[in-house]
Length: 531
Image (cartoon, rainbow, N blue to C red; front, side, top):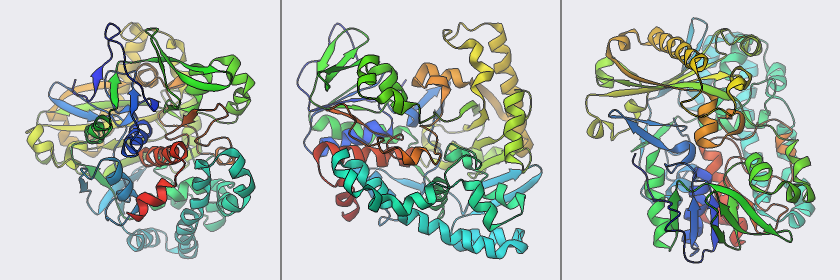
């Protein structure tokens, strides 16, 4: 399997001094390591899996390549956009983007299809064309998207500050943002419009930000809507492009990237983080330890429970919840995407426009329709695909599910979960393939290879407890957690990634910038955006 870095070997061990140790090589871990390397810091980046990249990793099998958790990115179409500048900085200017077509998302509600275009005016017109009786509410909604996004700057800036420094400025920096983040998506939308189909359409890609409209923060909804307002892009080379470009930057500064290197404990002495212990028993010391493992993993598994209790972190963890779980397929076809007729636009499909009822039915009964299914066509988006995998195509599918449907296999070993588990995987395979063939019937004849994933796959390979697909839920309560900042109550221990900022690849990247800013005590976000 292709990856960057080297495999950790107990017999060889780890030598040398490091300015920082980073646990986890997702976008949060990779980006903070790259930024610190560019600040002349020697970083040790450790990944428990045998592939670098976390949820942006790509893997190959039977001549096909899939990316685990990166499917489309917004706000990178212009060299003046913040998103482009952040990705450009952490990859050393080497990342190239392929634009998706003008229609980049297709929303399917029951048997009704809506094609989502790039551009605020085009999107607003689409909504008005389908819902002419809701014009006033649509105009107000479109205006709110920009207002909410602008209000977030102070909220994210204070996350790089120490808790002492932030306390005095917190209300001023966050008040405007909190006026939106405190409200539920469904409540705001219901004040603006009354048509349930319109609300369902606007929220059809809520899987992108981790939480259904009856529970999600309206601010998160608006930030995501703005992120994709001008369309979407895909990195040339797929998800592996990120790690391939950031690894040399880290190594050129004297850093080391090791995969197959599971951290079992963050070492804390007298309230100060001093290093890590690997599952092999080897210990490595550093004055800075950064966790990209998520706050739940960090403070309930990696930090000693007694240390967490003394720091009050056990009580704080009770205020946040992991995101939803998914089942999925990675599919290979023995014909090109063009020959099959695949379109780069993603498909978000829902059984009805009652999003809450869809969730309730599936939570009660696994055989009920999946609340949403996301279908994406990576081989149509990656400009390098034709050269690397000629005459082949891939599809990735994900469907919301409830972890309780898989709880009976919790703690079982990979490939040793029994016939009942294999039977439910076969059922997932059949259901999702039929959904794909509903949209692209000609794909049936070219089907060559299928892999099925469940929440247990994410537990096993990504160490996601209860199979959480993203970070922590983007609820109003999440955005009121003052302790979710780069510096933790344990001196020398920092967090990065989605849980620090927001869910998704861009959220994890922002988390990396915030964390690096805290470590070196510089406003690196402003520095990068001004470049």
